[in-house]
Length: 375
Ligand SMILES: *Cc1c(COP(=O)(O)O)cnc(C)c1O
Image (cartoon, rainbow, N blue to C red; front, side, top):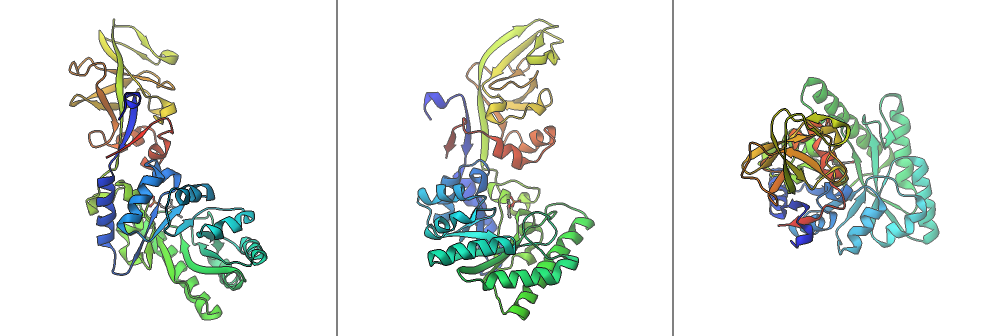
C-alpha cells in the first residue's frame, strides 16, 4: 500500500473468499453447479478480483445486475458464463450475443423483443427464464390464477426463434428468515417453481438444463432446493446469519486512521448540528472516514469502532469525509493509528443494526474513493 492510500482502505481477504467458496462447494450435492453473485462490484469487494478468483477456483457461473457490470468482467478477461439478473434493453441483444452473456427473460413481451432482434442478426441469445413465485419483483407471473397463463407464456417464450432457453430460476423473499411463516412461504415458492417447470415440460415439451433458486439463505437452510445450481451472494463474502454453520469467514475489513487528536474541556460541542457535548475532559480523535466513504450518517453517536485493543465511541454527526471518536480511555491510540470500522474485531452487524439496515447495504456503500487492498 502506498502512503496516499494510508487514509482509509478496505482490506479484502481473497484467502477467506477462496475458503468460503470451497466450504460452500463442499456442502452441495454432487453435480450441483455454483453461480457466484458478483453484482454491485461483488458487494463492494471488487468484481474483477473476486470473479478472477472464482473462475480460477472452478465456479460454473457468475451473475451481475446489468450489462455494464457484465462487460466490465469480459473486458477484465473473465471468460466463464455470466448471467444478467436485471433488465437489458433489447437494442443490446447483439452485444449480449457477441460477448456470450446470458440474459434473464422476465415476461413474454421481452422475450418477443429479444427474439426479434436475435433473428434480425441471424444469431441466438442464451436466456434464463425467471418466474415470480412470490417475491413480486421480476418474473413471469405464475401464482394462483396466473398459473395457466404463466405456463403458457413461458412455453411461448422458449419456442421463439433466436432464443436458447438454458435455464429457469426464481428468487426467494424470506429464505434467510427464521420462523414457521417464512419456512412455509419459502416451501410454497419452491413448490410453485417446481410445478411450473413440470407443467412447461408436460405441455410444451420444454426442459431446462439449469434450474436454480437457492440464494444464500436457501443454500444453507434448504439444501434440498439446490437443484442444478446454487446462487449465493452474501454467503460467499462470509456474512449472513447462517454463514457460521459452514464456518465461513468475512472477507472485508474497513480501516481508517486517526488524523489528529485534541483535548476538549467539558461542555464542548462536537461537529455539525452540535449533536454531542463533552461531559468531561475528552481526548477526541478525528478519523479520516465519513459518509462519502460509505459510513452511514444515521449511526452518528450510535456506534463504536475497534482501536488499540478496545473500542472508541463515535461522537457527534458523521461528516462527509471525517468523524470524531472519543479516545480518552485509549491512550495507546495515537495519530496515525489504525481504526477498524468493521471486520474481525468489530462485527459489521453492530453497525448495520445501528443503521437500521443489513450488512449488504454497508458493504455496497463502501465508495469508489476507498481503495481495495487485496491480501
Ligand atoms: C442478489 C441476488 C442473489 C444473491 O442473494 P444473496 O442473498 O446475497 O445470496 C441471488 N439471486 C438474485 C436474483 C439476486 O438478485
